[in-house]
Length: 184
Length: 439
Image 1 (cartoon, each protein chain N blue to C red):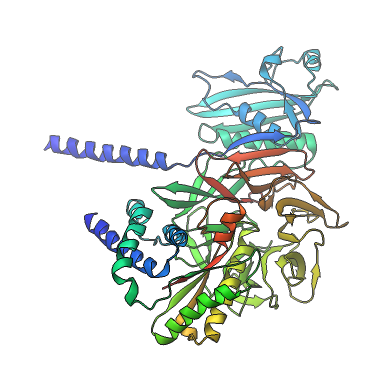
Image 2: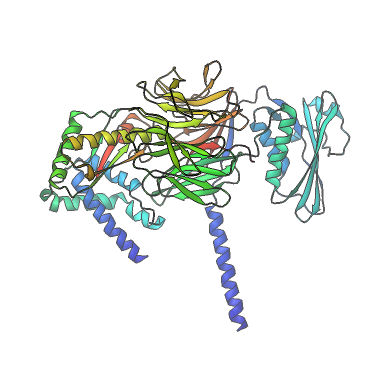
């Protein structure tokens, strides 16, 4: 039990570390960490241990800590979430800029692999949203490939509307949920 | 020596008791049904409390209450309040029909419940036509304490069939997904309960999402999508044994399973060849046959009850609309034209009606289409309705909706008249699927 908890603390620490590089805007950082809360449970963790992982305070606390010490020496792009319009997988200029930073990093580090996770807002049916999430993740992957990222470096996964970062039933929440996350 | 043995036995007993306690605590919240519309035009019926013939006290579960609740829920009957009844006749009593005409009953059910042995009973009842002042039919149901609820459902089916000429669906079940916040994480449970929400049993529990449960035509198996391995995969599970088999874990999407009516094939969505397409899997050897080929999204396949066609959602026209294709493949035919979003088609067992999610002006509601005329009727008036599922006799449609930020199930009759809500005490419920008749 204790051993498990220690392992989890380390896990939380590592997760926090992974999050840092990714989140710069304070509001985005919160979204990213909370998405990790919902998404990062592995099948073999128990309920008790999961509560440790899902503590948002720990995640963000560690994140700001590490940011001040190691943030500068990493070339990993700072934003790992891109957003989409309703029912759309179109990639705009802002998204393109974010992706080009990832493409440069990944092209320079061909050994690094990422998960490209597609998400949708809750409107529309669940299976359709699974397909829509995949289409968004595919669109992002296509752009990354055109920018020189190896096809072996990306794995596309869709979560549809199953893993929202914002739980409201309003346009603001929907905007945050229509996204693709690049998970290193 | 003896003491140690007693001690050991005590430890075992206590452990067993704790285990039982834990199991019972895990037992899931029962769905409670609230009727929100549609008793107008229902036939008044008097269901008299059972005359009890036994040495012991009558069992706590009183089947006539279950029967009354079932018939009320159908929207076709209005059981009259017990306090209005001037007499409480048993199955063998003589009936004074004037008493029942006075309170407006069109039909009367008079019954006797007899104790045959330890926790063994017999329920005998007679259904009377009050206006014609004559008995219609007499029934006898043997039962046990354990099976009282199931017997009450069977009695409800018998009365419904006798008076409406249609089979009842009170003995059928519903599958749904329950999501509960637990220790900061989420627990997903695939549940199977009686059609009235009682007897919920967990089929699968996971910290990762579960969706799209689908019944096999014989009601013995469920197919579903589980993300337990952080990847959408399709499983089929035998309900009696709990044994599951993973059917699909291809690269990309593995979703939207739908059983063919003969139980031999499964339609599903895969994106292994590029993007979301409809495939049919032969369950005997898991071989795949690709049905659609289009760069737009194709998903949510569902078989017509004759097994000849598959309806599905496609974005090939620019917006999600429902199309139909032969189960052997070939050209597609567009089914829906109204609104900018139509999805999740499902057919009534007679194949005459198609229910689906109809989206227009930002609202997603349940609609039903008459296949022969193509006329569509919107049945619900909320914003985020999904997952429609016909009751086996085709009278009701169960679906998922939201009520004050909570995910609940709701049911509406295919004429839109009868409305009910099914919610749990804690957490969300979603993804309902009504079972076929038991075979």
